Image (cartoon, rainbow over all chains, first blue to last red; front, side, top):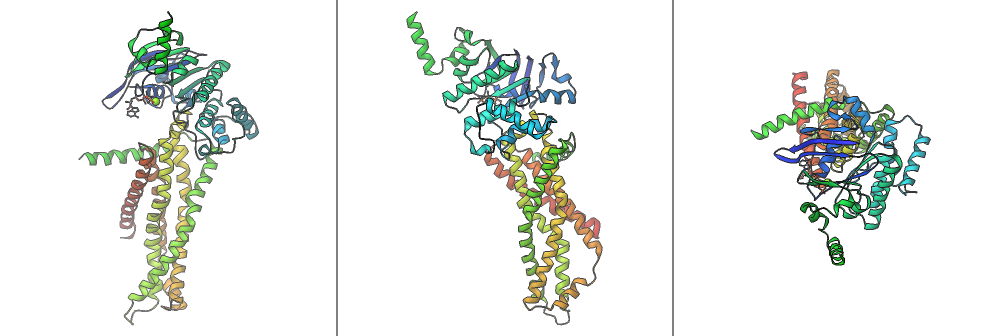
Length: 254
Length: 249
Ligand SMILES: Nc1ncnc2c1ncn2[C@@H]1O[C@H](COP(=O)(O)OP(=O)(O)OP(=O)(O)O)[C@@H](O)[C@H]1O
Ligand SMILES: [Mg+2]
């Protein structure tokens, strides 16, 4: 469980997060949605400690980050897996070494054991026989999957994903969503996914937080999101023609 | 005024960076590998160009000196002497380092810079790794071997001078070697290697700073590498002046 309590974040005079409070639950895929520029990436980076907030508090379980010492923060980070918007694979290393990297840094296992774990997670994300390729030699969807593999190789308790399926075809996007959902359930971890993809909302949106210009304007589940009258949410949900058509059909039928 | 403040805060952030480089170390088994890789990239991969340039510039220095010696009263051994002095004191340590600012410096800036823009540095930080230690420390250790490169430059420069002087018919082998041995102060070598050590540290850290703190995308990586070359050269030249003033006057 992760809780943010009234956090704000500014870059110079530009206030990007304007006091957000929300709870992200364990064993669920929590989504943060909103238009481009609404502050989704920034709030994620605040939670994982890449940005420091200007005010407010972030709790992992019951522990406030600001009250942890450096050692505790480092231990916490070993429990965090992060999938960056651009993948952020190390392009000087091949796939196997990328995925093995967190193990080499934080475990005392011998190489054969690490390799076994690497192959296990690569298999989990449906990637085999790419161990010795480099990130520049695989497709975008494969990169995302390698990033997921790297993020989960250490069995994190918290998984953060920034737009895991942007730039992917709808089929692959669904596969990635499902993968994140399954991993969350299997390991009973707290997962937070940033997205503006309505398909993901429908597929895996158990708990949704909607941001607009740095404020939280709505939260609920994917069941509720289609029923709300909140104007910002409906604008967002029905911004795609497809959903508008579906809604019109539904209205006619009733 | 605004620019001045920026320079001062840049200098501050450079020294803060150096402080962080030596804090919370990366696991030693991983660090060992990183150091070996940097020695390969920064030192071994520079040997070819260093050898090529020193050999031919040494030859040119020797020929130039010979051509400017018209007065018959000046002994021919001066060619060897002048070649030795200019190569040991300035050409090998200082000008080689400027060339290295172009080669090693822009390599460091662009490799760290591209890791910055593609969030690879953020990825390291999220894992709880001190990215400055991970990226910069091995470069500093590798550059401890930099004096070795410069020693090779000195040797090949003088050797090139010898070949050009003797086989170009400007002087004899005996005259040239006699010149090489004339009034030799060992302290000049000490001075040259002290400089070299500092230049090596500058080459490892200034371009790292440029890459690590850059903002933007791929285009800015290119700009940062150019900037890195300019600033590294300027700092090397200024350091050269200061060290010379302190040690030789
Ligand atoms: N490092 C930064 N420095 C200054 N401003 C920033 C920085 N990062 C983000 N911002 C600003 O914060 C705002 C929110 O950005 P953010 O990246 O969180 O958007 P987003 O919701 O993730 O959008 P997208 O869906 O396009 O990824 C933007 O106006 C952006 O300009
Ligand atoms: Mg974003």
